[in-house]
Amino acid sequence: MKLKHSLIALTLATLGVACSTLNPPVSLNSAQEVSELNYIEDLKSPEDLVQIPNTKWIIASGMTHHSGLYLIDSQSKATARLIAPKANKVSAQFPHSQPQPHADEMQIHGLSIRAIGSGKSLLYAVNHNGFDKNITRETIEIFEVNANTATPSITWLGNVPMPKDDQGRYLAGNSVVSGADGTIYTTVMMHPEHNLTEMIAGKITGAVYRWTPTTQKFEKLQGTEFNGNNGIELSKDGKFIYVAHMKKLSKLTNTNPAKEVATSELNYGVFDNLHWAGNKLITAGSRTQNCGETMTYDCLKDFHITTIAPDNLTITPLYQGKYTQDFSGVSTVLPVGKTYYLGSFYRDKMAYFEMK
Image (tube, rainbow, N blue to C red):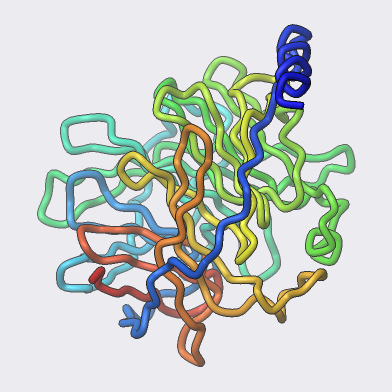
């Protein structure tokens, strides 16, 4: 039987068909219990978190109006809105930019930050621009982060408009990551023709889109159509794309069409935002033990923190914790030293705890 499987795999490889590795389910029992959370208040829907490289500073997104971006001192836990001054002009890298958004209009979803040297970084932010549900446009906003001063500042460089469907409706980005060459990758969780009911039911609703400085437009990567495309990351060499989609995580070739080379599935929760933490990927999200065969938002209770090996997507559950009246809707995790910070897609605070 082993020989037969090997021959099938060899035949598929010869024909150019990607052989995807599916990892077995892992139990949450080995995860350490988080008994108590501390809070950083006065943040509106801090859906995603990134650390400014080689500093104590954290940037949080605000996924509602009058929020945009926040700056958090990881030592003092002090917070402030992070607002870019009015730019004199758009960067030549983004000639098709729409006007610089007002800070109160930005409803920022996913974040990604990339160091470019000399104490500076590029920050990419998924923006649902507008007030309440009155979204006027969908863009990826790009900022330069300067950490050479006592308090970091940002400069708006421009934005990349999201594509529209054949009915003129914007596709809404979810998460974002950039390559060293300036290429931007974003996930679309639900195309406009789909809804939350379909996504929760397990239907294919989203995909990955790629923008390059050469083409100056987004293209859908064929083979990345999944159920609820969410967090996204690139391999360190840029050859692979990691995509979180509900209870699954896929490793894909950075090609069009993309080929799936490995898959993992959580039997205890959903994947959400995805980031690098040292030499592993890390994610956090709600747990699904109470869901049974059918998943609904009502059954998403409590949270998990999980790391993933980038080569074969082996899952290691690190922490588990309970939702409380004060905190729920965990959407991301950011380890800074021995402290883990948790974001929420709808609470007015972020949480943190110390590693024991």
